[in-house]
Length: 310
Ligand SMILES: *[C@@H]1O[C@H](CO)[C@@H](O)[C@H](O)[C@H]1NC(C)=O
Image 1 (cartoon, rainbow, N blue to C red):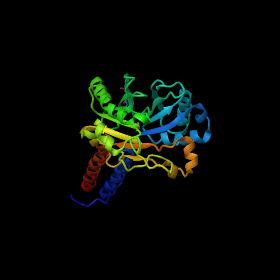
Image 2: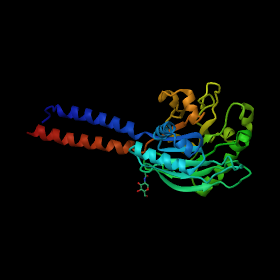
Image 3: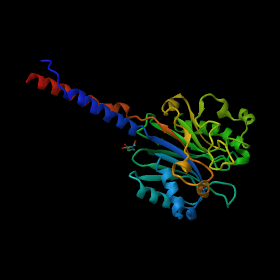
Image 4: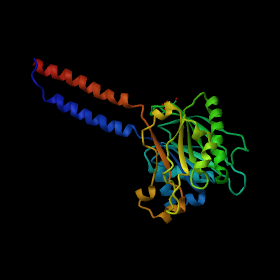
């Protein structure tokens, strides 16, 4: 009895590192928003542009695209994504929205089929409130600490950005009632900075004044490609403590793909003058991932007592 087995510490060490790797990969649930500026089939048929968008979208479990002109472009992008990546991607799109026939835009959510389910869609209807009324989608995932959440996109009209951002509060009331769910995230190009939304304008925006809303992309973040602009146009905002505590702290940022992919700014601007913004959700799997470790500890304890009984 009690003779020391060198196998136990080794087993523990191995399982500990396995656990670390598991946590690292399991915690990567990413939500992104990207204004792709008049993304149409002509743009999607440019190999280089398509490749760039593919690389950007393939980093995300859910990616909101804004300013999508035709659904053919999305068909092309989905085909490219499904060739490029091990995940399978699908999309859910709004109708074409807008006031003028030559500037109609769709909101499109592209998501990894195996990681998240769409459980509802809702087109906000009050035409006088927005040029492109938010198209809310409810998602459900077993992979995230938060089970069911609603994403509300906005690509605001610059000249009425303050009013439109303020009216997101009305959208919040409508969708949270509809689905009996207050886990709501707002995302997109709000034009919430520089000349369109000044510091003085904030008192007129309910989501700024109401402490229940957390603005995860801060005012100092530059979400533009150009060196001439330094503006936090693109934002991610969440409602409520439950949602906030299900988000990886400090994970919200603009993704500077220009640097990361080593592109020139002028090449990047052929795609868009916006950078994608993103945030990571905590994984549901921490406990689940720990189970193999517990089993290993149990097994090694049995093996050890068996060996010492010999
Ligand atoms: C999506 O829904 C199906 C059917 O309810 C379920 O089996 C699957 O696990 C869900 N996927 C995720 C990632 O939650």
